Image (tube, one colour):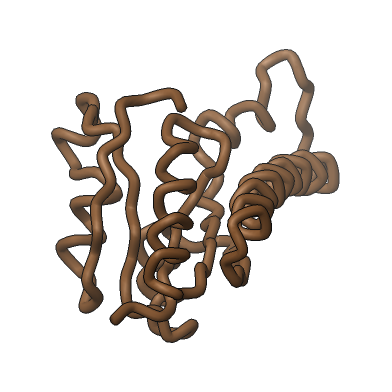
Amino acid sequence: MYKNILLPTDGLGKCKSGTCHGILLARDLGAKITAIYVTRHLTAAEILKVYREETPWGASDSKKVQEAIAEAERSHKEEAEKALEVAEKMCIEIGVPCETVYLEEESPVDGILCAARDKGCDLIFLSTHGNPGIMGMLFGTLATKIMSYSKYPILIHYCEGPG
C-alpha cells in the first residue's frame, strides 16, 4: 500500500516516540522512510540576538552581522543533523531503509510538501502533542496547515508530550 513514508522530525523534541511509531509503521508495511528536517527562517529572537544592545554596531560592521547570522544558521544545521541522525539510527536498528533530507531556508509546510512530491512519498506521518498554544490557535499549527494543503494522505500520531 504505502512504499515511501515521509517522516518530518525534530528528533529531539516533544515526541521522539512519534518518530519511532512512524518507523515501526514503515517496517510493518515494508516501506521506506524519508526523514526530513526543515530549517525555519531565522526567528525574530535569533535576529535580535545578533543585534544585542550592548554590542556597538556601526555601518561598517556588516561582516560581524553576517558572521553572527551564519552562526545562527550553523546552529540550525547542527540541530537538523542531530534530529536526522536519531531517525536514521532508529531505522537501522529496526531494519527499515531510510533516506534523510535537510532543507534550508524553507517554511516547514512548503518544505515538507515539496519533499513529499520530489521524493515520491505516498504518505506523510506527522506527530503532534495536541497542545497548539495560543499561536497555534490563532494561526494554525504545522499539522493543520499541512492537512489543509497536502495532496498526499496524512497519518497523524498523537503524542502526549516529552517522550
